[in-house]
Length: 308
Image (cartoon, rainbow, N blue to C red; front, side, top):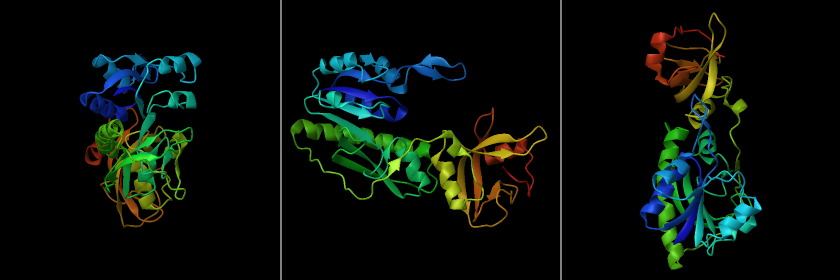
């Protein structure tokens, strides 16, 4: 089919690659405009933009898809359909109705649970055991359209948002290719979402990321893994020059009690409101990620120390 692809982050790249490999004609790739990235804050293309350029695909980076000129340009592509994967902009009805067969979104949850911006992170933080990827027909409501296909993905006890992201991106790429084939053959079945069980995956805010050691350890562990690698749940270490910020990137729950925030052994076991978490991988401010064993070689953290 002749289609457009709208996506921005790494999560969307595998889907675009799979669509190209399946032989569909990608008339245009849409992505968010280049943004400051890296230490030098140089303007760099998004991962989807970079992939499209490397494979000779036409790219557009509109500031807003609500611009009448952009809507008309989209219509002029005369598409069979459009695929949207974490594009990052709201699409108006005029855009959604422009392709002959409609616009289809690859979403990272089992709808209607976790509609919205951060379904992978929120699923881990909530303690979900299973999540998934679904292809749905896009409507004007936020992730409210009928579902065409589903791939379930298990959430393991050591999963972070990063590891789960990678498995779901692969599942989503396979699912969208299979679903496009069904759409092309006229064999796709659409099922309306259940009205019960709707939850929203709100965008992760920076103020959420600080660890509250008075919370139960299982909740702290889920928060650490759900915010890893970005933005990273963080705490502070005491030092002579003042508190030092450290991100916790991987942890595990242990059924041991102590005063919240207190270091309980020489291998980074930290007490919480109920139980404790063992920090397995951390990142001190201004440095790279380190396993706990390596981190402790360069950081004195005696038993009994209190983390902020």
